[in-house]
Image (cartoon, rainbow, N blue to C red; front, side):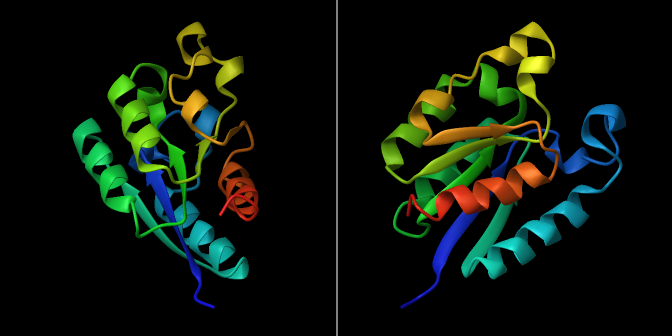
Length: 145
């Protein structure tokens, strides 16, 4: 049996974790967290790729190209979570299990962050556990793929 492939898709400004809003995201770098995600995926017997872009269209293209390649996707769409209907539609059309993930508790932040337009096309949402949100999402995918 071949290993399942998982994509971790990171949206705008998530390359700046460790630099931006340290009170919200901490001071650990994005690169360090990404390496830990890959290590956790290996422990679950997944092959894991991580893709980050600050551009909505690039994220949509990556979602489209995931069809037939990945069995599951973890998505932290950043601020696009709250208003990108085109990202929502891309997720809906590929028919791969997506777990929406946020490092911060989006419901404890500004009002505009309380609404996710992608949540209804994702299998579930994990937020508020810092980098551990990604590890929890990896575990959640186990029964979805």
